[in-house]
Amino acid sequence: MSDTSVAIRPGRLDDAEAVAALLEPYIARQIVLPRSAADIRRHIANFLVAERDGEVIGAVAVRDFGGGLEEIRSLVVREAAAGAGLGSRLVAAAVELARQRGATRVFALTLRPGLFERQHFLPVDKSLFPQKVWSDCILCPKRYRCDEIAVLLDLTP
Ligand SMILES: CC(C)(COP(=O)(O)OP(=O)(O)OC[C@H]1O[C@@H](n2cnc3c(N)ncnc32)[C@H](O)[C@@H]1OP(=O)(O)O)[C@@H](O)C(=O)NCCC(=O)NCCS
Image 1 (spheres, rainbow, N blue to C red):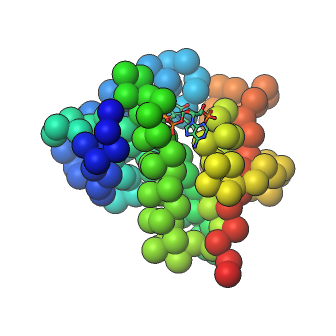
Image 2: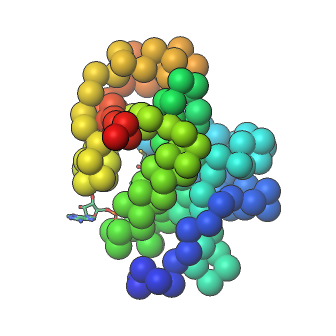
């Protein structure tokens, strides 16, 4: 897959079903948090999608926790397109979106810390993000056996 054949652009309402379909197998395996097409549609302004030949093959979302803190979430690349750098491009694009929105810190909870560490995120303790724990982790099927690693990027100059 050549990099230039894939465009990363803001999500549109009519992308919601395709993004939900990309996430679905990973939700079933408890790799990403559940998100329905309706929920994606409601928060579509927070999404970026990767499109190749008119098809959505990847996605990522940001979430504003206030106080300059944004989370990168719902990161997914279609399995057949994985391993060619698109996940890293989506992380970089999400950081840029968060920066444009005024973020000073961007975090993620992930099973793939390498993806983020290559973009200069550092591993940190999950307890730094009580807002996340109380809004999402509390509903997560893995809440008592969380295997995710928290990573943080400080954007302050
Ligand atoms: C995780 C996921 C988004 C990665 O997408 P991808 O397009 O394969 O990502 P990349 O091609 O940028 O990187 C994949 C691998 O290529 C290799 N790679 C990519 N760029 C590299 C570089 N510059 N140097 C060395 N290795 C590199 C690494 O092995 C990397 O795996 P790692 O990030 O775990 O170390 C995708 O596999 C996916 O959708 N997985 C299921 C959902 C999921 O896990 N989401 C993440 C939740 S935070």
